[in-house]
Length: 319
Image 1 (cartoon, helix red, strand yellow):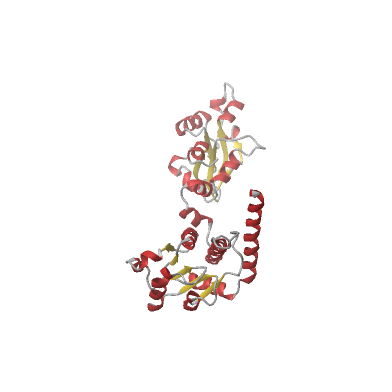
Image 2 (cartoon, rainbow, N blue to C red):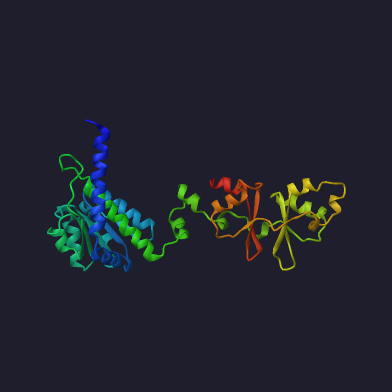
């Protein structure tokens, strides 16, 4: 036995099945997407055995991409869990054979209370396909298992079809990055999608001064703020410049404290909007091709509304 040859054969068998699945999708897929999109309630996903594991993942993917969903175990359904399913919901039932006995109670319940039933099955003539309002059929493709018995290709197709449904619903809803972040606040995804407004210091903490202010006063403002800089605004409150620790070093002289801010400041500083990703702010602060900065003013229509320090990004894990 050559393990690499077995692995490649398995992947080739399953990838061929996925291509076949893509080619056989038809209006029934569109009808299922429309049915789920119009729901007031949730998509209740169910399956037994290996199909049950796939059903759990599909429910989790739906829920994290804007389609309320939950998994109900078919074995527990007849012992009270049918009460989790409401008339505003729809059922998505998975069974390759379409004859899984444990699904009977869920199917009967859906039919009794006119709850939409969508099936994913490999048998168009099965009991499940016949009972379903919409039956999404898996193409006839061999299992990757050499005996043709272990659920391999069939479960891969179920999983991929669930992902296709979730993705189609995501795009139909116009699901945004901001909504995605709402559902994924923790872990790497949460750090990647965090916005500048979530990390910035607000208006009350802004170190600001005016162009004609003496540098002696500006230095006090800088020192008090702890951001290592002071923003310079014009009479309309728009940010026109910045004075940083680096500017102080470059203009160091006995007369520095008596000079005006406009003679020391750096004009047109780098800024960012509050709805930008924090990762974009990091790119502006440490761009690689320009001198890095430690603080970045956050502006709306040119008016400063916040300030972001490199340490804020470090604490949030945006690196």
